[in-house]
Image (cartoon, rainbow, N blue to C red; front, side):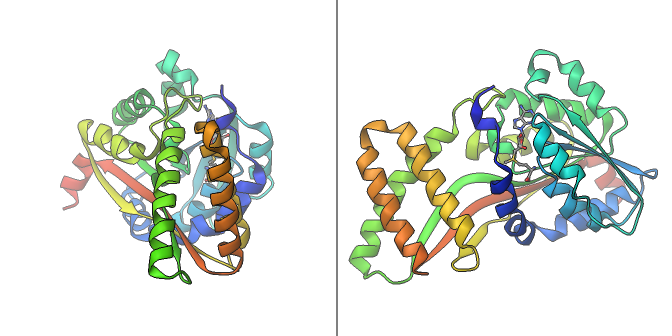
Length: 295
Ligand SMILES: C[S@@+](CC[C@H](N)C(=O)[O-])C[C@H]1O[C@@H](n2cnc3c(N)ncnc32)[C@H](O)[C@@H]1O
């Protein structure tokens, strides 16, 4: 398992409010309509649940009795999730399962056991880490159970830094530098993060295609982050640092260029002269047979 699949609790806490304000609400409503037909409590499996951000966002919005299993390979994050359950106004049972999703590529029956009796498979901020075979195995397995799938906040590989203060020539130079960084960052994303060669920004489309091939009606909607200082100062700094570190690892010979890029963008960000946008996608998939019956 590569270190790229472990995440700091501080990073997840920083992104949680921004994730919540970026998610696409009409997908929750379509999901609620589908869940209304299911027996109570509805059972939910949260893959790569981390410290429980997806649970805290989604459980109060489902407004019905729920039983969640949070699956992750990081025991410390799962403990944090157990310590911060959301108020829902409905019965909520939460279990945690310490396990490695990489296991199902060797033994698909592992996934079958996890999915037993599950109504909804969900995940957030996970999909860029996974491989094509992970996506295909999951799509086939959920289809045998006719479970719903809601996968939120998958990065699509795009980010932009909009400069509010630079002259046109300076802004054009910065855009070229950002493009160079983005290209190498994407190459870095497409490395093995523990579940095979990672799909990176291609993952939302790959997941949608696999689910459609298994008889699902799929909607993919944009859920971009839009960050401004000072409100999102710490998250923006963490992102700039993350891009710097990833590209330095990817292009070690260009360390000085990357360091210079980072110092200049960080200074602009701290002065409030940048808007940072990061592309994400939310995906909802429901069995097509249900869609046909409900118009
Ligand atoms: C970016 S975090 C997202 C966490 C949470 N869903 C959220 O939105 O805050 C990705 C999560 O996937 C988990 N993860 C990554 N690879 C995994 C694997 N092979 N098996 C189990 N969990 C994994 C990490 O431990 C981490 O908690």
